[in-house]
Image (cartoon, rainbow over all chains, first blue to last red; front, side, top):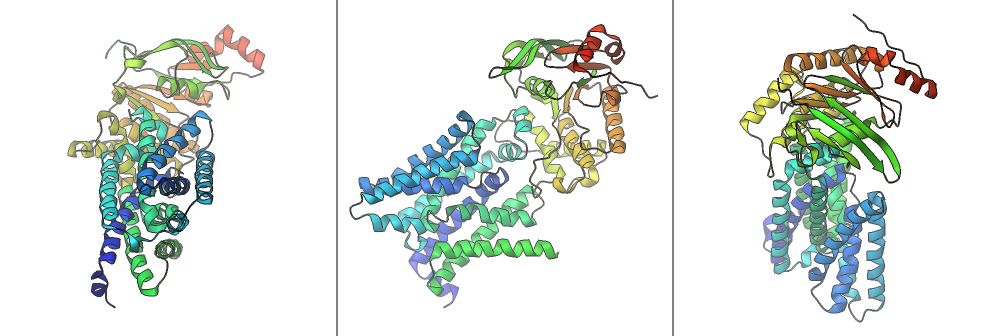
Length: 268
Length: 252
């Protein structure tokens, strides 16, 4: 089967379209998160989204409508816990993540018939994405990318040296809040594609792969976007042709690129 | 040259929870001063400069920058800051020297911050001035400690500041690079009239370059010339209490 044959399927077209936008968003955002040692925030917020999706299903709402505000509020809670309780970010992420997943498990234990729906979010399936979800993914991705572009130099400066950034008038607390809220939105977008368990891989792997090769910040962002899109598109294709789970295939292809670039750097 | 003091610190006290990190400190910095800030570990040197830069809140007292209270001061482009070396930087951080120096111009812009052709010329000129134009496209993490320090100095200088504040800039430098670095600062201070405040542990060395020494030990022990510092009764009494000795000699 050729790529053209594959593109005749409506569900593949939708998966490619939504997947490309989510790939670009995750790669760009992931670069800032990795360099700020916040890689695991994606994992923590994905766990929260599990609880939020369970709540949505339990209440009989479209799960994303419940997940968006809950995950965004949780992202702010992580920041608050970090500053108020004077904890490192990883501990704050651990607390919020555990509460999220525990809430999901309790709701699932009380479930009446939504367990199958809920568990489909654990591993995701971009091949079953609906037209409205494609539109939502594109709109939210454009919002995230527009905000990242608007605050590009502020984010770069605060990532490189937060204290120095403050002395140049950059409101670093505001920038942290923006970054965390964008991460929350991106995590929710990615859950449908790769599932709760694998979301953080979409944020981390393209960024760490790009860091093996890039010398400039703009090049790093470009490489991350390229590796991310390549992994998503080949992952969707391979999973369809080989009858493999899509999310896991995308993640393993991402991981393979990381391995190849590390080897390339060692050899050359 | 303007006669308005660059900086006036009046009865400044800074507390972290119940600990008084700085107590009742007052001093005035005049245009063109080159001030070495010294004191033992934990004396509050970094706290002092971070408070001057607005990174740490004032508990009581006041700071006046270029005649303007710090709370309402907006002309931050007049102040260049060079922090300690980049020990915690990710070794793969993908930033070139030029990208880092551009960060020094952010203070002159508001979001969305983008750079113009004029900004690119300013960056190129600053790199030229510090003899690091050939490093422009190099990754910052691939440079030696001395080269990184010059890049950070370029970032601090690119917006043409009137006051430069340094936090132990010579820590990562070997003796030859350190001498070169201090000579460069002295030239900047003398030729461009830039005021310099520099934290240093090297009180013997700073005496060759600074015209004033500010010695701290949570409170102000001395503010004045190096010669006065050695002769002053109050400093002698302080060092007798702490079992330290003053050793300073000037090289020609």
